[in-house]
Amino acid sequence: VTVPLPQEPVGVGARWEVTRTVTQMGLRLIQTMIYELTGLEGDTARVHVAIAQTATEQTLRLPGVPEGAEVKIASLHSGGSGDIELLLSEIVPVSSSLSMKIAAELEVRGEGMSQAIELDQKLESRLERR
Image 1 (cartoon, rainbow, N blue to C red):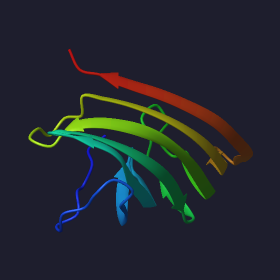
Image 2 (cartoon, helix red, strand yellow):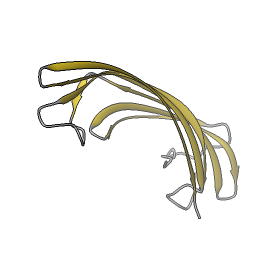
Image 3 (cartoon, rainbow, N blue to C red):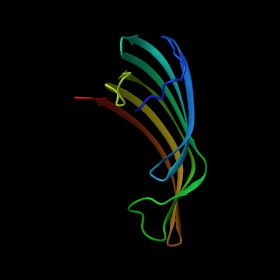
Image 4 (cartoon, rainbow, N blue to C red):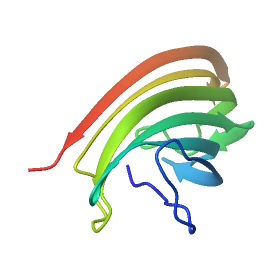
């Protein structure tokens, strides 16, 4: 997780928002990330992040899906939060932790059949540099 820093100098308690379109595994998402600077000591910053993602209806080409079959995303909403520690002079964070919940409605079609799928998933990730 990288942290896009504001152009202007900020202090502890500052908040900034970044909204962008991202593509993950062929899925186009609108992603909004709200950052808050929670600590600053020398070159070390601590940032809290809140994330929200949505996807509009779209068809995906996924690895392992047989030729002629398709996976259609009817809706996808995800959100979560985490904490990041970074050195302002480096690109890769020192550490980060993130918790996300994902809810999606999908439809798989192929060979004259169709199957609706509801997905609820929770993801936890941690990064620690060595």
